[in-house]
Figure 1 (tube, helix red, strand yellow):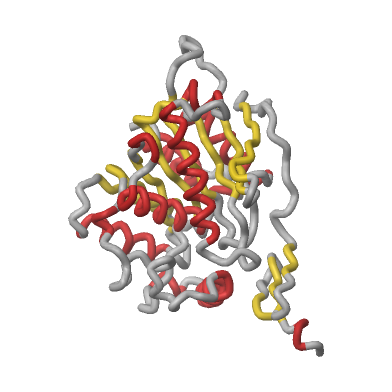
Figure 2: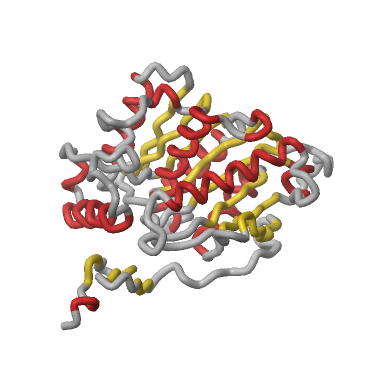
Length: 323
């Protein structure tokens, strides 16, 4: 076998395959769906290129007016980061596009779904750096946004109510965005009101009970991390373990509220629980809430949209975005 054809990362079922040569084959989450007016919810979406140099872009969403709404009425702003292990998906695929349509309609918010560059071609922390670019771009609209301002943000967004959210790897990114905002601030003095972490992709060298729910999945997630962040110091790198000894104190989380959602049958369940506990114990002055969907696996809500637990989690996230 040609050494360059050696496989360094693969999944079962096959989602992505990474070769020693650097070649990457993706088998899932590659087909985009166009921005549109969603016939089921009336939510409108459009795409915007934020950084021509890097290709970083986003999909924007606005809900239709409710009865009694004024066109100039300001709405909460949600900056959303999709999951996919830092290596799959985009803001434009049906899985996340449909979820954002539903979330925007029910929560009645303006949303910006960040599209970041993927590992391993662009190793972590590229995804975080690109997401920071998107977040700063959003915050810049609080000052009008200049001649290139997006009207949906400049005219409809309430920058006193800015939220971050994401699922899995996107939740990891949302955490780090809130930490960066707490340390360095955002343009125009924008502050993050809250962050919702849905089934966050956090790891650690200590063994936890939920890691044994699906041992193969746990091993895969650990290998995935090392592959997508080859410069990582390991499973206790603060990028993947925010409660590690070397990680910055969670007391610096740059928001006033946090919602952590976990699945009862998720191999990452106890990592989310530990984050919630450590946040409450850190001296952080905000309010934290834990939501657990009993008997449900990782990111179940994206695939089981109509089940009782998905509806309850969706309601919890929407309520969080309106407080």
